Length: 176
Ligand code: ZN
Image (cartoon, rainbow, N blue to C red; front, side, top):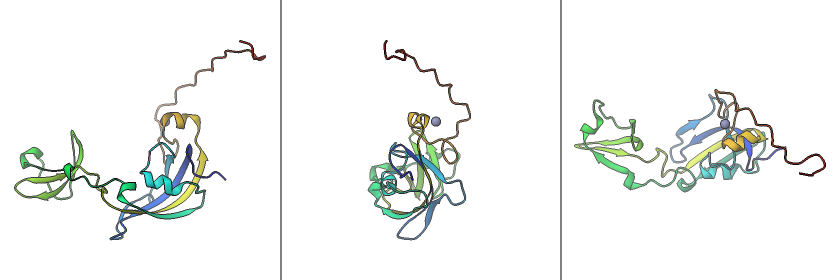
């Protein structure tokens, strides 16, 4: 049986919880299993590392430090901005908005509005319960694209470019 390793495609069901509160922050349970190409930095680093060597049917539970998940919380990414910056939007705590610098969350409302550009899970330790649904070797186009294809992965609307016939440089005898 194929084990999870670099250049395999793993399909997994997962539930992520915050170990301190038990709050579920993400789960694939009501969706297709997630498919990802292993070894191409598609997932947070600890997630792949903990699943290395697992095979179909395995259930794995692990807790990652913030460093192995979404990284430490960067205090420089927390800023105060005047309410006028929000234009017609009334900021509310917990709201996530998009800016030229990326998404941010509103974390405090006072004379100025405190916004946090950190990932919502930055600085947090995360627990994952993962069930491996399928492991298969990646095909060439997946490795070339750097992502998994098919259910739970990237599904291209447009047909793949037709493969160019390989340039033949030598004849059957091995002479060029
Ligand atoms: Zn692709």
